[in-house]
Image 1: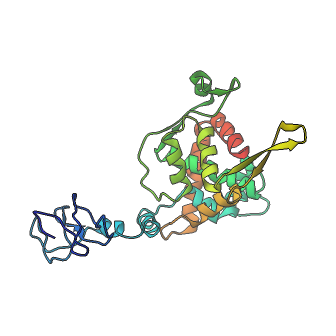
Image 2: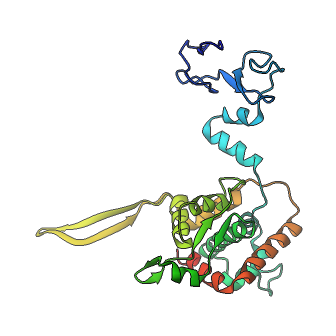
Image 3: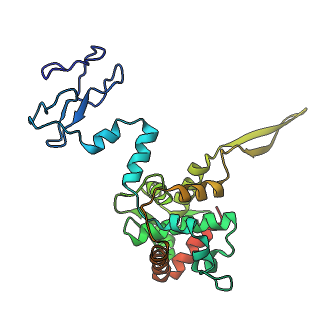
Length: 278
């Protein structure tokens, strides 16, 4: 690999722009120098640009991994204690308050933790986390009325806006929900898109044919890859997380949820109804 003319040392193919891998054979040819952040030949002992002993930039080493493994390693590096994950892993603490006779905070909103109630509570917890930590802004019901966003004359969700870049694991409820918030105008649209993505939603529509011709009635069959409640709970439980002490971590998550609820009971009521009616 020369500086004047970039050529792959493996296959001899020309490389127009410096990159980690050869566009022709896909093999690694360059790395980013940790000292000057410039691309340089990875077979040399020193950087071609700054002359420093060659040490590959850490994230560049991660980027050279196959995509599934790259995303996994990156999410491990960005692991956070997320509210949805703590709820999914410690259901009793949030629904039963640590005792059979005592109702937890989420039980007051969602009732018994059936599969669908738990899934709704996890999505609600993700909204609470993102809002409390300043990643999104969830508007009030009155703002939805004034915004003019409606379905059949009724508000189609609370106003929603992403206001900060998500820096936690992408494969998490919070990460997936934030991604939807970057384009969706309302919580209802974001929640529906989130659920459809996680369950691999794929409806099959068929017209019913009779001897006299096609009938206007149709039959819709759900061909989705998985049940939405299962998909939501599965993602929340498998989200990368650092080592933690369950008791203080759950207490902090409880406080985060309580603060979000106290901030606007009216908003909470609408959001609970939305997440339960998906």
